[in-house]
Length: 147
Image 1 (cartoon, rainbow, N blue to C red):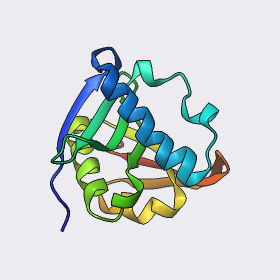
Image 2: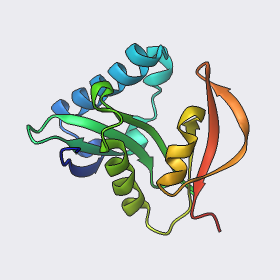
Image 3: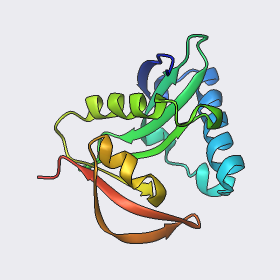
Image 4: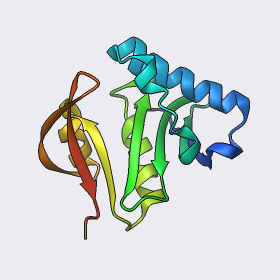
């Protein structure tokens, strides 16, 4: 059974230096080390425009994250990540449940890794379009609350 996470979300300007470091470290472990995505494409200069979701374990460590472009229409969701050794434990589902609660009934879209399509579907998203390459990994466009 997954241990509960405590979720918060903040605009970039409100992140502490420790939170920013922890978010970038987590994304580096998941995307750069774990999946071989280059650091150049991971740290893309877009974080300042985002609200950052942080899932903390009972020790206060950030183990799950996502970034949301709340000012875009549709809202753009990205950099969904759970610490590698905690994946498949329910923490990602808890993260996406929190993300969905922030989005509410507003339209949203994301570029999701294609192998996670069925999981994103289970947490309320639907695929549109064909598979495409992003960072040398097959991706699909997923949407939620399309009007």
